[in-house]
Image 1 (cartoon, rainbow, N blue to C red):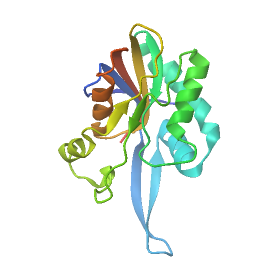
Image 2: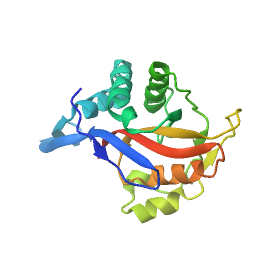
Image 3: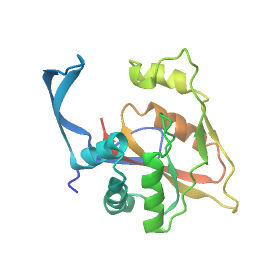
Length: 196
């Protein structure tokens, strides 16, 4: 898989994304339902992620996890546990959880799928993707992430949060703020598949 690694900044200790999601997108007109259509070219990780999330192609889980293991994991120091980023859309099977689970399997790093959780947004609140600024998103996310005391052992561990698409970083900032309140977490690292 061809990648173009980029460092991503936020309130975490260190973060990287494998590649830009969309390389080009040209408007091609409207379909029979009046919806706009585009000719879109994605990076290899971007296309794999698109197929996984929107076409339910679960065969993309393994190559994406293996690419994170090969290209990003060596950039972090002593990852002790993996946490999938909370999903913004409820699905029966969550793509990010599947990638995190496979990454844990091939690295023998424990995965804690319920350590981090996010409460639902108020019904009257617009979706995050429809908000204009990071400040609006920060305000909408304040206090919505919580930690479950799932780690039975004493000590502290560096955590790797696995995410799919990195945009403004507002959700990741809020997640990391919550994680840093947990006494068993040391450094917080972020591995995203793509950036917007």
